[in-house]
Structures are given as C-alpha cells and as structure tokens.
Image 1 (cartoon, rainbow, N blue to C red):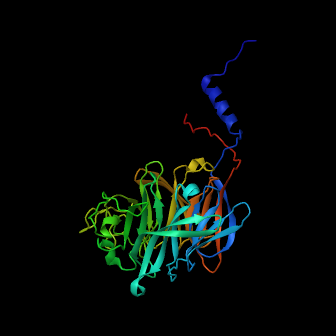
Image 2: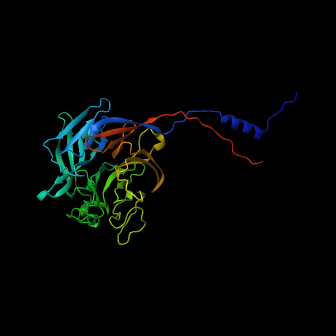
Image 3: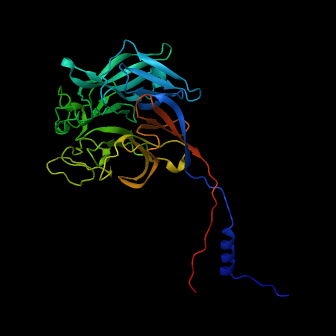
Length: 390
C-alpha cells in the first residue's frame, strides 16, 4: 500500500488546530490586597529599614515620633524624640516626609520634614536629620538642615529623598497657599531644594549665590504642592507628582533649573508665556477634575517581573493606585490597580519581599497599611488559526 504524505500546509494546519486544545500555565501580574495593619492615624511617609521593619511617620503627632511595624508579629515599636521636638499640627501640617539614610543600619540617621512655628508664631517647615537609638527606643540628636521654610495650613510639600549616589538630599516645598511665591527666587514656597546630606549648599545649584538663601538651595521652581518624589533607578532621573488646583495634577520630570509654570501654566501645556526655562508636565491627571496625586515609587522587586521599572503613584481624592510604564519621557502604558476601595491613599513603597505597600490617609485612627501581593493564576493559553481566504 503506497504511503501517503501530508502536505506541509496541511500538517501545519493540523498542528495549529491541536494547539487550540493545549493549556499551559502562564504567570500573570495578578494580585491580592492584604490589610497588614489597622488602627493607624494618618501614616504619611513609609520606608523599609534593613531589618525588614516598616518605619512610618504620623502627620497628627504633636512631637517628632517614628513607628516601626514588624510585619511578622504585627507589633509596633514607638521611637519618641528626646528631647521632644514640638510639631505644628493643623489642617495639612504636621510630621510629614521621612527618608531613612542608605547607611541607616550603621548610623541610624533619618531625615524628617515637619511643620513648625517660627518667631511670632509664623507658620514654617523644617528639614532635620535625627538619629534613631534602637536600644532606648528614642530619636534624638536633631540637626536642622533647612529651617524657616515658609508654611501654611495647606500646601506644605515636605517630601524628601536621598540621591542615588548618597550625596544629596532633595526636598519639596509647596507654595504655602500663596501662588505668587512659586515664581519668587527669594521665597522657599513652590520649590524643590537640593543640599548635601550635612546641610551644606552645593555651589553648582542653578541659582547659587554665596550667602543668599533660599535661592542658593533651589533645584526647580514653579510648583504648587508636589508631594511625590522618586529617582528612576534605570536612569537616575528625578520624577515628581504634583497637586493641581481643581484639575490637571501633574507627573513631572524634575530637571536642574527648570520652571514648572505654576501659577501661570498647568499640566502638559506646551508653552508658557513669560516663564523662562519652562518645562511642561509629562502627563496630567485629569483634565476635568483633580485626583490629588500623592507619593510615588519605581518598582525594583522580584514579585512582579512584568512590572520591573514601572512607576507607581497613589492619589488622595480618588483613592487610586496607578501603574505607569514609561518610554523615555512619555507614558507608554497605564492602568489603575486600586480605585477607592480603601479611601484616600497617601504613600507607596516597595518592600524587601517585592510586594507593594501602601498607607491610607482617612484619619480618626481609621488608617491602614495595605500590601499588594503577587499571586499566580493558571490561565488557558490558546493559539488560534489565522483566517485564510481561498
């Protein structure tokens, strides 16, 4: 009996049809939300220490205080300032931004931006370095780094980060509810500052003039109230999220000496008449209503390999967690992962386990630490034949 050979096109068709019934496991970026801790009061800034504990500030504390959450036991250790460092607590003012030094395990240093009163009860903000003493559960040895920054009931900024080379501190300062300050080089309002970690001033800052403060500290200007700040690991560039007035919250790439337009221009407006060195926002959220962008981070963990290098930011008014994939200076992809299920979201960071941790800001000891945890889903994979005309 003669052998019959299948033609190549027919064989390929049969193989393709067979694939219709083949299932295989594919890891997808699916996740679950865990409630890690409840009963907190406005945890404003969250950061992981080398020992795996989650340190955080609470905006409502009347003196400088840090808390460290053990994720295994759920216990919180409280570090009180000694001597007590009083805080101006009113409206949006209080204990705000916090960053642990990269060498925290050795030196115990922590940088905190908080609200104070100056002479004559003037509303101000201060950036200080403290030393955490684990043995005595205290935080002390305050070294003021930038003092007398203009403050108000609202728009105090106060997000702080350490540069990737571990040389500089960057801190944001809002316009203190006075929009005109953002364009004034002799005011601290509406600016990003850059200093050395010991508080000294880099002479290559764009507006440096010996003995002239605050202009010598300025890195960028023209901000309303930027409360998100993070370095992109792949590029070393500094990104920020900023509150718009009633619309057009901004995602900005902060570049030396650039002016981000407030109060003259908003969002992605490409040109801004009368504003030198203007830089438009990379993206805006949203065009019709504010979402109230808060802090941000870049993903560097292993739990979500598909999200490596992606930008995450949280919002207050809409309670959202956004994920963005950037392509140079454009947003190539974005999605909303949380949409007000937990109320206002204040801060976001990546844990040593690769999961994403978020703090809420609802007040009344009603706040929580959330964990976005990876889970693997088995999904059927199907290959479909192309439609062919004959």
